[in-house]
Structures are given as C-alpha cells and as structure tokens.
Amino acid sequence: MTEIIAQDAQVSDQVLRPEVAQRIDSLPSLSNVVGEFLEMSADELVTAKDFERVICKDQALVARLLKTANSGKYGKSRSINSISDAVVLIGLNDMKKIVYAVSSEGLLRQDFAVYRYPGQGFWMYSLGVATAARILVEAASKPTINGEAAFVSGLVHDVGKLIIDDFLDTEGGVRRVALADEVAVTGVDHAELGAHIMGAWNIPEVISGAARWHHDLAGAGDICSAAAAIGMGAGICDFWGVGTEPFMNLGEDVDPTHHEQAMEALGIPDGQLEPVLFEMRQKLAGLEEMFGN
Ligand SMILES: [Fe+2]
Image (cartoon, rainbow, N blue to C red; front, side):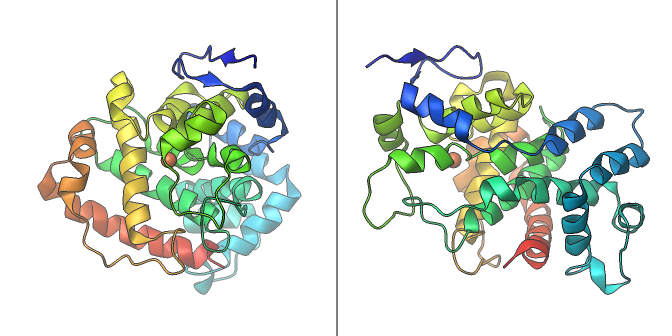
C-alpha cells in the first residue's frame, strides 16, 4: 500500500493512509464565517459593525443566532430581534462565541459508530472544551495563544475522530479508544489527523498546533501552554461529563495533581485553580442552557 508522508511542520512523521487522506476532502468544512471572524479578530481596527456585516451575509446563521440569543439567560431580560441588538445586549465576545458554536454545529453534531457520546454530545463536549480552554488561557501567566484562538482550537481539537470512527471496528462502541488503536487503523491518531484536517481548512497554525499536541505536551515545543489549555480543558470536561455523560456533574472536585504538567506549562499555580474552576462551572452551565437538547 502506498503511504503519504506527512509534510506539514505541525504534524509529525507518522504516515497518513491514502484512504484516510481522501476522507478529509469529503468532510464538511467549518463555515467560512469562522475563517472571516478569525481574520477580523486579528485586526485591531475592525469594529462590532464589521462583525455584524459578516454575520448578516448568512441569513440562516442570523436566524439561528437570534433563536440562540433569545434562549436561556439572554432572552429573559428582553427580546433580541436584530444582530446589532444582540451585540449591544450580550457583548461582542459572547456574540462571537455563539457564532463559532452555531457555525460548527453541522460539522460536530454527529453520531458516532464507535466513540460513545450520549445523544449527539460530541458538539456539546467540543463547546465545553472550547470554553474551558479559553478560561485557562485567560488565567495563564504564560499564554502562547489568545482566548479566542484557544476557543476555536478547543472547538475542533477532536475533529479527527469524525474520520477515524469510520475505520474502527469495535462492536457496541466504547468510551475511549487508545491512541495506538487509532494509529493501527489509520496511520495517525485523532490529534494528528485533526491537524491535517485543519491544514486543509487553512486554520492558523497556532490553532491547529495547540490541537495537534493536546495529548502530547512533551511534543508541543514553544506552544506547550496552548496545547496544555486544550488538553487540560478536555480532561476537565471529560471528568465532569460535559457531553460525555447524559448529565454533566459540575460539582465534582478536580484534583490538581492530575493536571500538574498542564498547569506548569500555563503558569497557573495550585492556589489559583479554584477561581478558574468556578468560572468554568458557571460558563459550562450556561452552555447547557443555550445549546443543550
Ligand atoms: Fe483528544
């Protein structure tokens, strides 16, 4: 069998099998809005009005956004009837979070044959990791990625599973698939495959790199703290059952000793973890309110 050697600097020397590489082309892409938003967010001169103009080009997105903005906590004070109302009322940062969430729904709200997520919890899990990663980066004394990029990286960090699921042969589904088993069937694990997918989507390298190393901080080099935010965010969401259990359990105590390497990379001392976890619990509960079934 011919094998394709990975060329991208963000991926290692593992080999991607041709039948797996072909599947990347057939995967639905993230919405163009995500790419436009990321570019605009890097430009300090861009205003809230510019973001509104991009959103308004996609009427399906506008409809979905207004429905979401009127659900849960935002809808209780007054009804939101336009994107500019939404930006004024809930703020540009939260508006962008909803745009990223809604834009990724078609891609991530999937059932798996093997990886087991209750209902279509993979989207909720991905949103949870995005939210947790952003909070960790914003609390870090050694960030190598900004909060918005960390959010997008967390959102797509496990996207490789969408393809690997087709190649696994495990009857009845499993909660976790060993990375070695993923490599055995596709030539790469889901983190590395995710970096290939993000490369095909022209996602900025800081975002794909953080996701690439979320299971292997030792390989992350100078983006170690970015990868740590994704890996630690994923570990905590998994522990609390965000998207991975029928009901999340945000009351469980997180043991800092399980995250020593990530906290060291981020520059978050033990004593500063509790307020970070408090904010995560609040934001994750809000996610469930806005996007839960
Ligand atoms: Fe993962």
